[in-house]
Length: 306
Image (cartoon, rainbow, N blue to C red; front, side, top):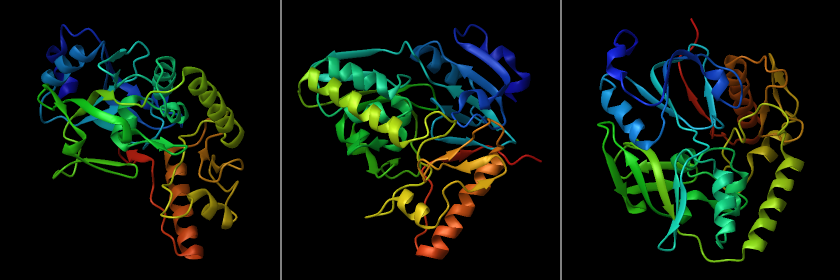
């Protein structure tokens, strides 16, 4: 087990922590602990860590934790925390390059300042580039993979590989390796192809979208963004609101009065089990009253507390 084999990680440049509270690293501010948490110094350090991690150990990757519920029992194995405020952004050969740990809004501003159009929607995604790639994040009419030219992944063997969108099955909030039920690797970087545009107009659009987000979403309270996917031809928030569920609470978890598809943790005291129970309650009520079964957009990981 990794907990008893620290020699595997001698010489790494990142930060290694054991029994790390993951509530510190997810936007809902709740959840259990990671057996082992690693904060890589850069992509090469990440690869070195993965190569040294025993193949039998489970491996989980977290960006900004903005689309994630961690159960109170915690996460076994190793958790890699990928947010990198100093991650590389560059422009070359007409493409915008971004490392996976870069926050999506930072990529939006970088693209705008370099004369790109249609990247503004990324300013409304409260996660990393890696997270946006993993779930094909989108908002305000844009989706991440619509602009992906190629991506770089780190395999479980610790080797880098460059792949194209054709090697993936891309859907609404869904990304899978073609012919594989999973992703088969950690997204470490991507090259985006955005159309040329006007920098001033792009920056103004970002300002407009951020103002809209502030006006319509409960950003002042711990939340994880949209909890449910929009069903075809409809909106999850409309369905939830039609069932008079705004403001409904279970424990300290509450459905936002500002946006029905957001669950908030107002006092920071909600348990993950409160949130998960509330999610299931909403699904049950909406299905019973409207006939629509909502699917979660948020990812749920970890073990139930014993």
